[in-house]
Length: 496
Image 1 (tube, rainbow, N blue to C red):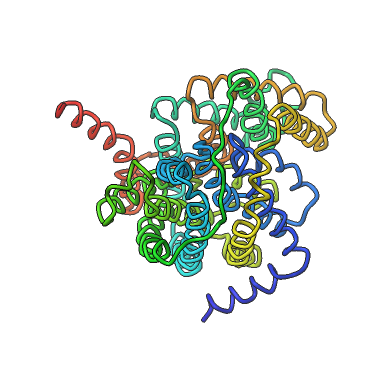
Image 2 (image 1 turned 60 degrees about the vertical axis):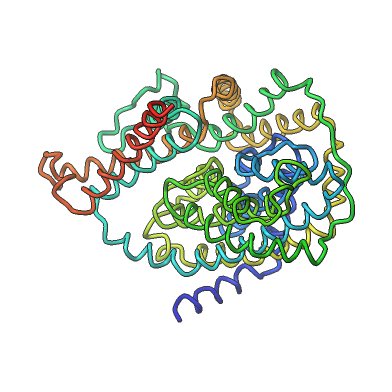
């Protein structure tokens, strides 16, 4: 009953006119961001982070959440019509969806993607509602050793899961950890790595780093490396499904939700693995095997798209309850929380209950908004694909520059913004993931403080990390995350 009462209070907060407006604006921007090739939700949220200086915390988190899952809905449009997935989770949708579009069934593919996203997103939101408070209650019992190892687990999972190389991911992480050390030491008060620059005494701004690594780097990268790419688009018919297509779609939606939700809940989650698993499952169970890889099978669109949205929604569980981001966008959302002085984790459901439950309630509201935005209005979103890239990315650079300058009116911040942007271009060029940099920068100082507290509890001995059962289990999990994938790859090489 407590959960139901809290959720009703969350609906009362989320349903106020101003919060509904922020949710609608977020969903609209998110859908547009998903439709436009190359601009992911991480870029959009990073670019808009400066609004946290002016907007109420609850309203801005509802707004950012709307962008986050709105982009997942909109991403299917680009995947199906252009064969250009904006997010890694939409890659599998493009495989069958684009083939359906080429065979004149783009409308059915877009319809099953939108409705599947709604079904999976709603069910996953119910899971968040029911299980997030329980996980938070259990996590409250943890002490400094466990908190430190949870953050190390976050470092390892984000570094290993995001990107193609664990080594590159860890390199990005250490760059972020180094950035987190800049400024005054929390305990001694001594300046660290400031190079005598007064602006660095307060440390590096998370907003500035996120905007530089995602928004500025994205725009500069497109100009330098992708400016001459010409995209072709398939024609879109009426967005509807036949009775037979409904019959083939709904079991795929439900199966995919069951597959995708657990992957979002675990700290080593993400939407890439469940979408591939869902595709493989639908291909194996389908009675229309001949359509896969030829004219396009609707199950191959319905399943992966639902799995993607279920996983994306469920990533809020580790973010809210443990403070562990498992994707680029949740890493930036973590920064948005910290801009308000809010640390996601076990205490969040007690210290900021109103915000958390309003955010969860907004997921239900946002799913309904997105269904309306993506079915009747899909023709409008398709027209966004006609926007030339040059003015689009020029606008992103202008928006990012004005937003960062507005924070402190500092020319040094602008210089640093573009230096970080160039670093982001180099990282993208050589396949270094950007999310570990943000995670390392945000969680690094917190992990340092928890480690000092843990060693103090152990009277100067690091054995405290193996003496407590939960911390020992976390150590084993961390080793598994780093070692098991390498062992599996070695085993595959020996087989072939």
